[in-house]
Length: 157
Figure (tube, rainbow, N blue to C red):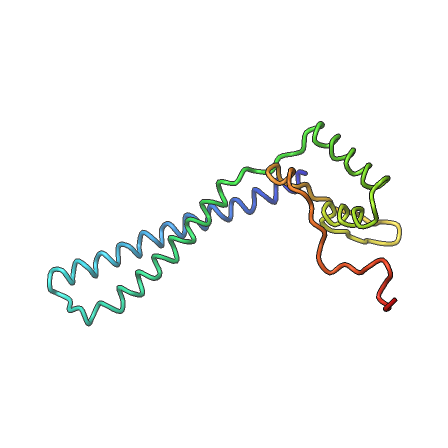
């Protein structure tokens, strides 16, 4: 769990840095647009000279504003925490039930839902890495993955 927390902090730090950069670029882009518009309004710059550049800058400002909103949303997501003892107990119970009384398809879906990756270091050392669903997704049902082979195998019946 500590690795996950550290990874989340690293990603969060990158997002914060990018957000600062985007905010500075957006401020500078808006300043440039204002300079062009001020020059146009004062009559010192003809429309033909500034119209295309103002369009480019306005497009860039829209892109930066969109990215700024994306980053802000990402930064507002709560940091994943370690599961509580009650959450782990409930998960153990659900896994035990699925493994002991569930159908093969249910067991396969369960393993795919819980195992993030499996690292094979040797025949003796196989390390599964598990993933825990975020709180807001725990109540949603798990859907079977598409493209599973029927129990009969690949050969036609």
